[in-house]
Length: 284
Image 1 (tube, rainbow, N blue to C red):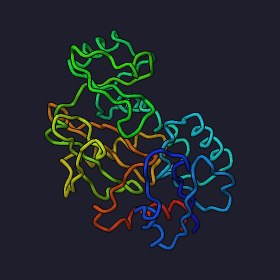
Image 2: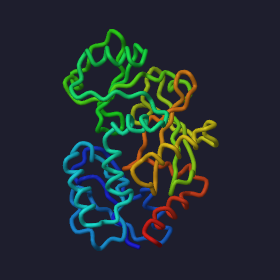
Image 3: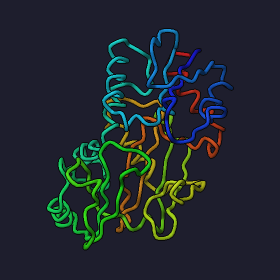
Image 4: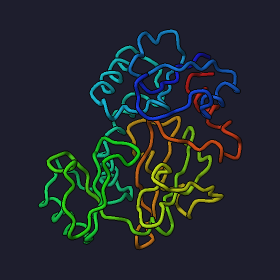
């Protein structure tokens, strides 16, 4: 089994480590040959049994190029996991509104094409919340994400841009955000991520902390499965981010189906179920 493991472009500005990537290492231990391939330079992939985008960082910054890559994989029947149709769907956070339309509890989401002050006022009326969060629909790692208070100006980098607008979930500061990992649709493990004091973003580079979670909240696994069932295709790997809203109702914050951190260091089986799901997708 030979796997192309998509990694950032050679000039990607943020540090990353290929020497020990936990997902790649688990696959090697399962007997696969894993090669690092920059996603921006992925030429002929016929020599590979599988292509995994788990470190395809920066795809959101060159999104047209990413979509063209997905189109090529689809046209050439490349064994890309997760499938191109799913990666395409998951790349734009507008999918959250689609999940809500299908009856999956999500953080309420309003998509706007050219964000302006009137959009924020409409969102406040619609959500019944003075505090909002705005973020680009195509983004990662909280880049371009802002908390907007009732008297705050719309940030310059958001004005006139496509954005999604959501109510601020204040409970995140207390309870945190639960990330559930599912491989082949089967629950594996979870972590809880909490922001630093005074912030609402849970990413570690912004001061957040990631902690083990022996058991996610009651109903979280069922919610994760329902959200994945509403996706266009089945998943081989998924991270489902769930938050309790300010009334205690569990809601989908995001589905991470492209290049999520899977926190295999917290997996009870050390990632064996991840490797099994990936290799099974290739018929191994």
